[in-house]
Amino acid sequence: MEKVDTIAALAALAQDNRLDVFRLLVKAGPAGLAAGAVAKALKLPPNTLSFHFDRLRQAGLVTVRRESRSMIYAAQFDTMNALIGFLTENCCAGVAEECGPECAAPKSKKTRSKKHEPA
Amino acid sequence: MEKVDTIAALAALAQDNRLDVFRLLVKAGPAGLAAGAVAKALKLPPNTLSFHFDRLRQAGLVTVRRESRSMIYAAQFDTMNALIGFLTENCCAGVAEECGPECAAPKSKKTRSKKHEPA
DNA sequence: CTTGTATTTCAATGATCACTGAAATATCGC
DNA sequence: GCGATATTTCAGTGATCATTGAAATACAAG
Image (cartoon, rainbow over all chains, first blue to last red):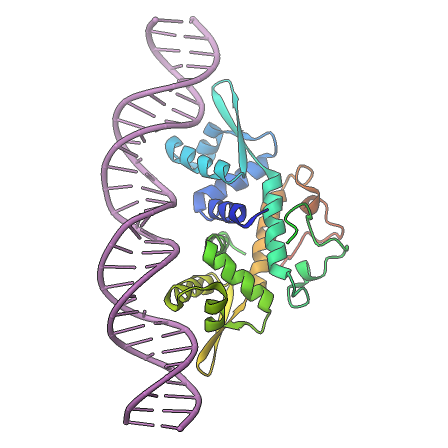
């Protein structure tokens, strides 16, 4: 994941309602949830929710598909993993010893998701 | 880590210059770097940098200490670990099977840093 | 105590943000 | 097509953001 994408994802999640939306979608799993279902669960007006969905989608954190009258939003787990991977690398890069035990010395050898940028 | 702190940390990192600053401090390790050194490395005017340091500090991502004329900023690895822990939980909570291999099935049993909120 | 260095504080500015109400679009059942 | 449901788009508003230049503060050296 490149820096610009990381910033987009961070900004998308750095907002109360959007973080709630994303957490709800994560709990819902790949099947996703209809926009209306999210609106009802979080008590958000549909236009406000639409605005936030758009931000999450632009950050690549969710996908949409139409299902008759409903728009089904689902969390994009790949992006979230890439984000966590980037942060983990930026937390420990070069100073693994000084970092917390979590990212400093993983039980297995592989640091974390290695499917992103070589840097 | 609570939701409000997570949002603060995410917002602090969701900005080009601040992400650069934090990455630089992570690379510098617990010894930290003088504000001037960061300013020179990233070519940022001192007042702008001071503004960003303040945001990072309010988010608990860095600490400051005075060393004669210089202010030494250092990354707060604990907070970063807590953030990654929160995101990991929110990525996988309840749907570990659907998530990426990284956070879905850690080699060891402990999910990640368990020093945060019980939820 | 004055000069110089390191950094912060203050005020102002343009940009982006989150939200709202109203209107538009898409789909379904009749 | 018509009415109802589900969601988005649009225009406007106050709030917050990132940046800048100028002034202030903190410390050290002579």
